[in-house]
Image (cartoon, rainbow, N blue to C red; front, side, top):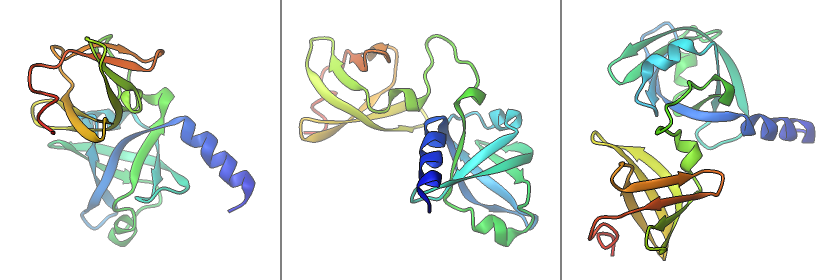
Length: 185
């Protein structure tokens, strides 16, 4: 890969956000089944273009979305130039990204995961816990994985625990209930 391609990929990455992952092919006509990070598979209906990146990173490839539909908590996509099951199988495990500008507008108390990733987590008593290294969803709520103090903490993203998210200042203030930070010890 040339230096110009590397630079273009890095610049593109800065404008993209992960929204899902290709789980497996669906059917024989090249459709793909997508695990949606936002829990809103219907959002895929508004995306005209997505980018796919291999499971181990690397460059991204643009695809036009021909059609999209929901299947439970998953999305089923038909992409331009992906017309066979074999072609769809090659996409399994790829991360799906879109341009940040294409993201739906959120309410004031909602955040995209990428906005929280890397922020410093501090208790309302001033104790530094660590940085958000990962987020995942359970049936009840989202969970922030915070790495610091030599361990990982799993902190529910709930209004009674998350007191303030200062994205500009790079900090999340939490009010952990008794025992929450002791669970991982």
